[in-house]
Image 1: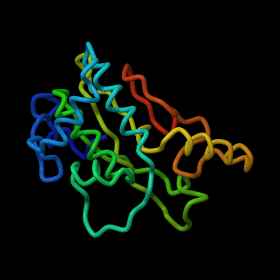
Image 2: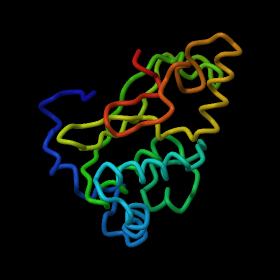
Image 3: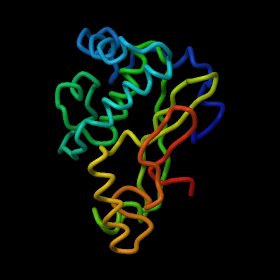
Length: 185
């Protein structure tokens, strides 16, 4: 998933800092992470509480001239894949769970029904350090209503790929393994 193993550290302690898009000193971000995880007893429960909150954010493709910060995404209440990934990683780190972002390249067919003439598409995948391993998912991108409608449309059209996912793709993530909207393909 990374461009070069030498460029990216697998040490989870490296993935706990603030970045240009993730200000871990932001009070609203820290309070949101705390409110989402206050009843969680384990890191996995924390991760799944944050995952659920990010997944419920309505997917929208806003016109923007730059990437938005986690604080801006939190305020907007609507977000695209990159914005949701930024917020997901920020909330995880604010809750004390190491998290990082990587991109995978997908064939353009995954966007059939949404757009045409795209040979490939980049997809943000969030990786979370749980149970001494990196767990990956992109299932936070679309909310449940969107996934249900997209999968129904794919079945009706007899398409395997389209609308940003695979007909047999994962809709949810349990935090115990990897889960992708593209399924196990």
